[in-house]
Length: 276
Image 1: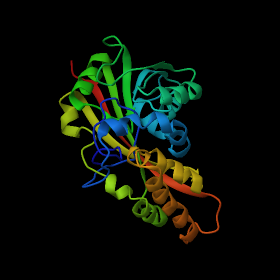
Image 2: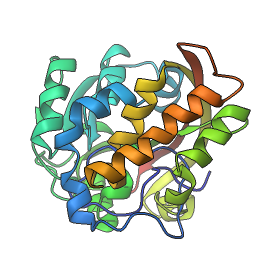
Image 3: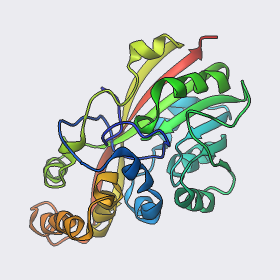
Image 4: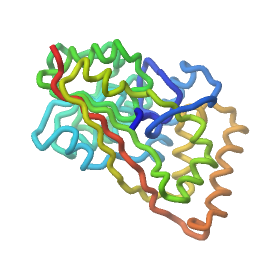
C-alpha cells in the first residue's frame, strides 16, 4: 500500500476525493485551486457515485469503544455516517459549502464545521481520533500533521482511508483503463509509515474488500465527481462520460444487465500512540 487518494496532489482546502493507492505521470491540466473549487458544484453527483466505507474498516481502525472523532475533509459525509453508525461521536470538518449541505442532511448527529485541515478550529487534546477518508492528498502535509498531533488526546489514533477499484476483477480492470483512471494514480499521497512513526508509536496497514451495487448512471456520477473531469468543458466531459456508456453496452460481463456488483478495496493506515 503506497498511500491512497486517486487524484493528483495537494489541495490545501481539503475535501474528500479520489480512489485508493495513487499515482500519475501526466493527468489533468486544470490548476489545483480550480479543481479544489469544483467539489461544491458536483456535491450531489459526488454523493451518488462515490462508495461508502465498510464497518470492518471502522472497527479495525478505532476499536469497539465510542470515541470523539474528527473527520477531516469530510465531503458529503460518507465516512462521517459510517463513524456514527459505529457509535462514535463525530466532528466533521469540511471547507466546501455545497459538500457541507449534503453532509449535514446525511449526518445530522455530527457536529459539522467549516474549516481547513491545516487550521483545525478545535482545542488542544480535544479528540481521541482523527481520520481522513480519500482526502489527505488535498492537504498541506506538515501543517496538517502538526494540527492532528495538537488536537489528539493521548494515546490518540490517526487513520488514513482510501477506496480503490479491485483490479483483480477483470471488468473493473478494463473499466479503469477506459475511464482513464490510470492517468491519475501517483504514489505518496499519504505520509509513509516511516514518516508517521516519527509522530506515532505504532503504524499498521490493512486492506478490506467491500461491495457496491452500480448501474451506468452511477459510474458516470463517479467519474463526473473527480475534479479533473468536473473542470472539463461540457463537450469534453460528455465525450469522456460517453465512453462509460459504451463500455457498459459492450463489456461481456455487463452487457444486457441493469446493475452489477462493483468490488472496492478500502485501504487503511492506522497510527496509534501520538508522540508528545
